[in-house]
Image 1 (cartoon, rainbow, N blue to C red):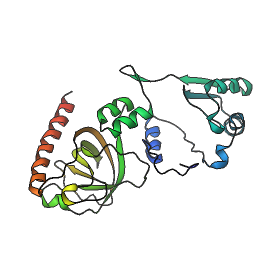
Image 2: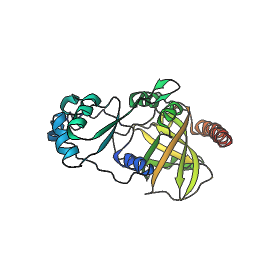
Image 3: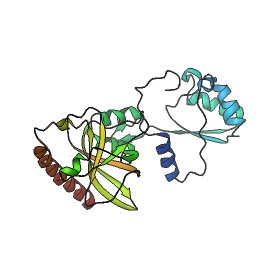
Image 4: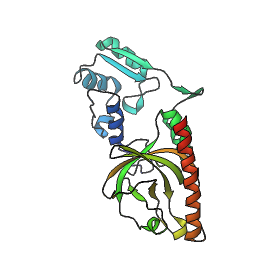
Length: 254
């Protein structure tokens, strides 16, 4: 995104989400080094010497088996081990992680999400994929048919969204786990044009405007459809709720 100004790059986590995930591991300190064009031009050894050794006085580095670094991604873990001997630091390697004999990668996780298979993506991640955003004013259409929704606005355009459709979700609101169903799509029944994210929470009634929410995606129910009337949409939402509650109950029992 920095070097080529591409706007079609999608990441699994925003920077804020990465910070939250790292904090949850019990990490004591986190340094986010600015990345710009000048930094990208550092040769591998120059990066190791000036940043890792001189600035951070590194003693041990834990690194993924396929990590590459330095200008044009020229160096790998073997180069790093050589630099470790030269500059007196230890290098530990994290082997490829496998789930059901499949080597996990961000590419495979993104593929699963793009196909709507959040259950598979979650198994790769080790946690439920989540979206973070602020609840904003919507058209209030859901309220008129008995399904009020929280409209989630995500500020980061590079955050990857799962495939358009209806999902079972969960959020922690005021310290309580609240389940619901979420639609990602354009609302074709009412001739919507832009993709929006709307969540209907079960057995929950509170003003969420302006509230920042984290929405965990648990399971995909169906594709988004255009219905001939709002009444037919309402009937489908009733079926979706039954399906969602069944999934939630099964999850609770397992």
